[in-house]
Amino acid sequence: MSTQRHLLLPGLTLLLSCLLLQAEPEIETVSALQQEAWQQIIQKDPEITPEAVQQFYLEYAPDLLKEWDRFCLEHPTEALQFLQRMIDKYLSIERVKEVNPQEYQRLLKVQKMESRIRILSREIQLLADKFAGKEATEEPELYWELQLRKQELRKLLEQSFEESQQHQQIEINRLETEMKMLKQRFQERSANRAMILLERFRVLTGLDGDAEEP
Image (cartoon, rainbow, N blue to C red; front, side, top):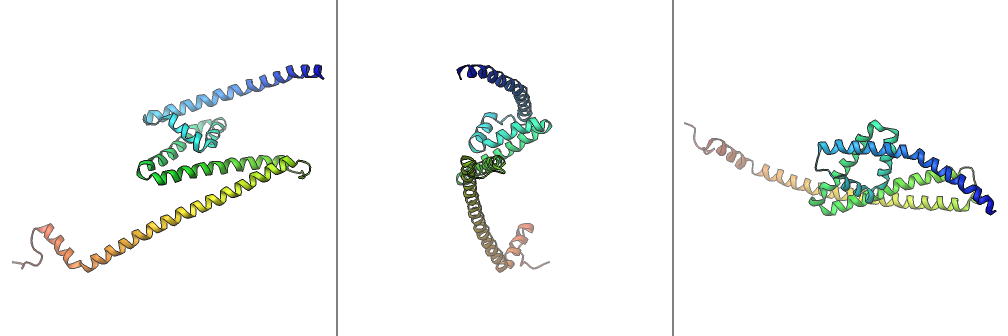
């Protein structure tokens, strides 16, 4: 057994070395594309900080960073557009930070939840492919792992739905309040029509509206 292990180890080492050698050109290609994309972004907007953007996605949507790596390999000519979309999303959320801190925190929570939903969806697809054509008794660990992922995804989808409904209800309430204020203002203007017209006439001409014409 010991002899077999010694024979296997060099072969395994060689295989891993080959895989690393194959991966290195891909890593270099992705790195070069991403550096070029960042350079173009910074030329247009020097205030953009790559570290801040990357830290944001590492914390709230790590799957999109991996997606960008994959995108650079499969669609290298569109790497810049993908990065620009990520930056636009980041900036749209950051703009809310000073104006509405509560809404900012909600948006961060949504980003994190949606990222986890995407990650779980991919994991479920991979596990389902592995489990295809098998019974639970054949692969019990795989079966239960798949069920746990499904359960977590369903729970997150419910949370996402409820969060969306609550946010929309808040927005509806805000719009209804604005509509009431607009209706009140409209009614007040209608009631004061004569006075409003008289004041506009006076401002435009410098004359009293009820003064007799010569």
